[in-house]
Image 1: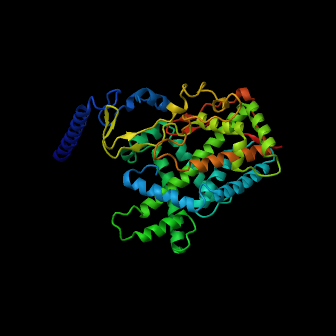
Image 2: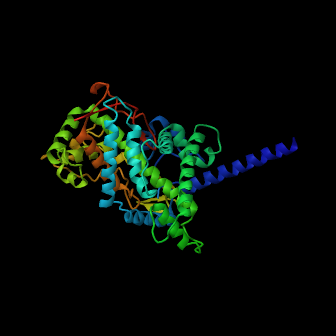
Image 3: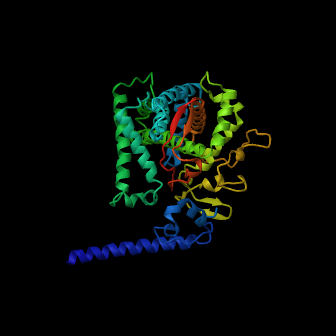
Length: 443
């Protein structure tokens, strides 16, 4: 009894000290921080957020590689960009892989014989195979059970980030990973993906030729060997696993979700799909596969794809970053270690730049003459030095996949256009479209 009483006193004392220190730190910074509601110790302003409308709540509360920071981020980002470039990333080599994969997708749609299908895994298999061919050195067959299992893990993990529990998990990871709840399943999904990558790394290690890297993993392993005597190196097994996971996950879910949502929007607006079909027939025809250079002659299709990205807003809050030192922003202080969210929605849905920000309208990217019009507010790939370095790949994939599919098919919803609901299923750190079915009818 005495021991348990002493333990309780010790715990309460520690909590009291932590609360006092937290309050003291907030008071010390009072007047220096950007304006906003007063945060509570530990949980900040979380109680003021509506977790069902997380993005909108943040816009009210705040005025104004993936999860790494500092020197680690710089080194891994530079290495990733240069290595992916070596394997054709952003060049003609990767375009040929995208065109080849589009052909597999077209055949998969033909095999459905016009039946109503859920397009989710059709899209994700195709998009994932492009990044897989670079990261792992090969693509997966569409009926590969392990591949389908991995895609399921990624989809469920991404959907989890849009739930209220997922938002809590992202913000209070160090605590919630130890508590029971749905976050434990999400944690298992991520661990399953890491385990797969670890097995791939082991396979590469056994057959590695330092003079002939086959994929991203090989290149990282070679760099690890070169820097094994450097105690400050960022090239070690833990970073290999996390960097590969970020590439595999990021190169799959964002583009495939955008495509899936895009087809829902086009079925809701058949007149827009009809104009795209017309432009595709005029510029490309039906006897050759689309190439990325075709986008220069297809202003309407370009406008539609940009508007899909703007409207879908797949990563509405951007990727969280952390300040590596005290930052003076205007007349305010942002202390070192502060998590910063760029909130891309605040720009993508800004009426100063887009006349009808809540409507799906390709005219947002067309001038009075019907030519494509760029917008400085088009920031789906984030902004600043750490914008998504997969931007060029994503643009190429979206254009080639959309035009190839529409070159070969009309598509149809079992619902009438006016009955199609294009509002998201949920919005958190990711935007998730509602599940739907559609049929692909050969042209």
